[in-house]
Length: 156
Image (cartoon, rainbow, N blue to C red; front, side, top):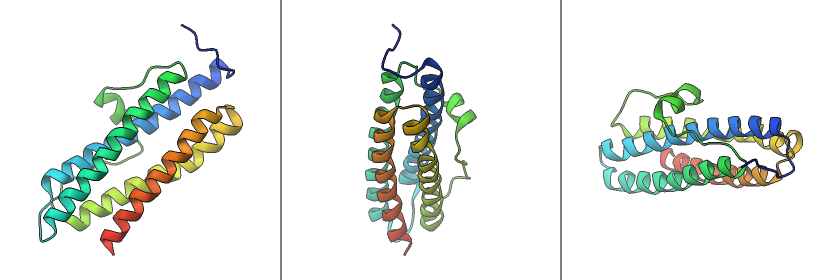
């Protein structure tokens, strides 16, 4: 059934492409965080193992909400790993068990997503006239800022 929410079909299509790119970034970050959870080593193993679990659980919620946001505006959410890897803005580094490298990689990814969100939000609000998605993305920006802050605190 066609979506009739006061946003042009062209803008809904453009918005869904941006949201699906963000979904790909979130999924890559989730997978990387889970990988580090499994493979962390060192003196702070227990603390980081638990820390990563909290972060990937939050990212799992974000992924579900974001995929549903794409559906709410009348488009399909990506769900295949190959599709995510084609459009993500994030880089998959080699697996590492070194906490400092892991945290640095995760911080860079959160900051990449934060920059992308800062670029997207005005497009959703001004160009697409999609204040619902703009509001959602603003909340998501805040979540990523907090996760990045926590990682910075671990890095000292």
